[in-house]
Amino acid sequence: MKALPKLARTSSNAELRQAFEEHLRQTSEHVSRLEQIFDTLGEKAGGKKCVGMEGLVKEGAETMQQKYGNTVMDAAIIGAAQRVEHYEIAAYGTVRALAELLGESNHVPLIEQTLEEEKQADEKLTQLAEQLNWQAEVDETDATSRQRESKSASKRAA
Image (tube, rainbow, N blue to C red; front, side):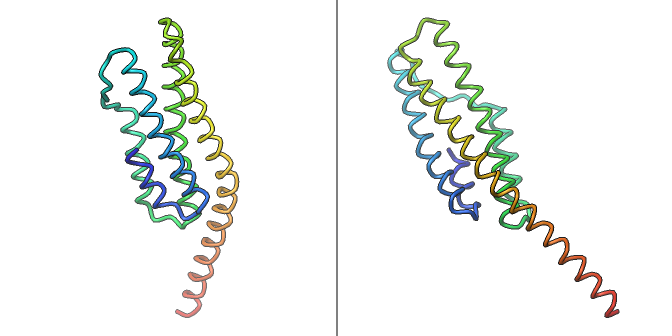
């Protein structure tokens, strides 16, 4: 939840920014669903530091510190965000399977709803990547060409 606002602020593409903002809202709902499940089980909902997720978030933060152009940065943060989404999809899939195995089928619909929203978020990022990756390639090719032309002009002037 802490990383999503940073991703949204870093995004130059309005549709990507909106996707991160929407997923932040959904993530709040995911937390509420988990709290509801824990409450029903008579357990205290508490977080435990997840080293895997921490690594993915750190990797995303490092990506945002790079000096990329706007579309290249957008493409890079989509990649970072999708790694997080895939991790979450795996986690919720496991939780769903465990709930079924333990006979807690009354919790499965809430878990499945969250799992489906994670899959939809991943699909939205894939669609945006298909648009932005192409534009990032064009932008990088143009930037490389301009750099070559500038170096060539500098050599001629010298």
